[in-house]
Length: 108
Length: 475
Image (cartoon, rainbow over all chains, first blue to last red; front, top):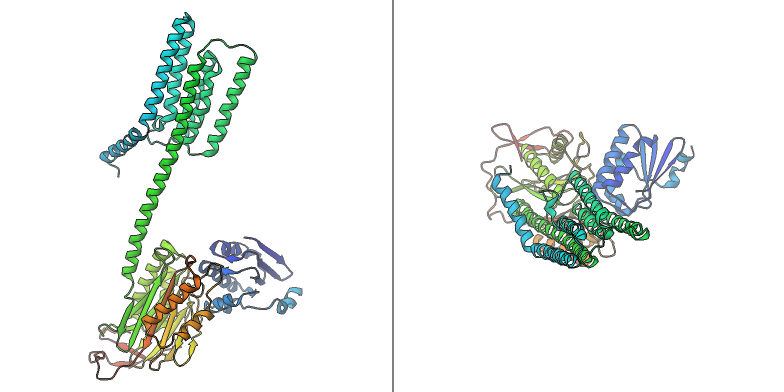
């Protein structure tokens, strides 16, 4: 899977460039966990499908990152996946935000 | 353990197969070679050229060996497929034999090198080796022809017609052997596929038989459920929790979805169902039950997440107590359609997760609809999803139907939407309806129930718990 990672002073932006997130691609996201700074933005702009294995891997990653004190945000999430994220309580650990609202964080 | 009789049977079956399919080719090839030898010998004798007889005999003897190697799978190893060392050893021996013969008799026989190497390479089931060794053989022959004819150093006047015949026979046999090899592979795969299909059919029957009945009536409650796995077996499940004191009475419903499909999901599902059954019998609060199942699952070697919604039915107050571990929100269809938003982390993700509860007071005629993610994510041929919204519209449009009719109708509408597109995920639907009956009908006998006792329920909203004489909390 193509992951594009932008690093700022205190923020990491991970652009998921695949159209689907499954167990394999979610593991790939997890493999860049050590590159996550204290604020990390996951960009789902290209993602059309997330299967249950992908949700499972994402949840583990997000909960683990929060335990380490990192803040995660999801941007460009479709309405369908917003609902799925809400049901699995992912929003408690990784709220959905608009990229423009996170600009101050990125520019800091 | 392999016993002697089995080994004999394996050998017998190999030889039997060889006799049926290859014997004619092999015998014909050998007969042609022998005939060619005899003709060559006669020609040699008639031409008074005794010096040329022995090289010719040597050539045809080698040709028989080559033919044997080419056609006989078992020459290089008793298991039919030689290991790497056997293959290398065989290749070296053959190369030496053919090279020595070429030195003695001229380049004609090295045309054998090509089918020989092809025949050897195909034993390894490696198409690249077939191509590279085949080309190497052709290249070697071409170089030798240049050396022998280019520099006019041909030592013996051999019978060109005879060697060509044998070369053609060897090549034909190599091709026949190659075809036989792939035919054997195809038959093997077909047999394997048939065995797997048969095993999956049995697994499907076992899984189906372990599911609760599709339709069930318990006092004021009627329910209907269907589970359609995307493959023969799936990871979706539903479960009825039976009341420990009242016969034929349910006190809870669970619906769940194990991440993934097929056999791994089915095995994980069996583990989760067992854990749930144990925990649901040990405690009353749905939130606590899910928490216990999650902790037990963490102790097991969990392979992924499981979403589960547990609805405890309080038959004394006609209320439903819900706890949700990341499953699709249930729908309540009364006068209006309402979705009960109750987020929760799925099971198997993290330990120490606590689950909130919600209580729903039902009015007569109300239905609850539970479903797995295969419903909103059912896909049509264009890749468009059925969506939550479309499903909610369909539920609202089918208000008033009995649970069984509603399940059938909703599944039909999903099938109409997907229009025969392959089912991408397991689909499970469960509809529970509350229809209070007149008091003089056959209601559950509750005379033998233990006295309810008031307990502290902590953060949970349930306040009644039944305790039997052993001090065990029962639903």
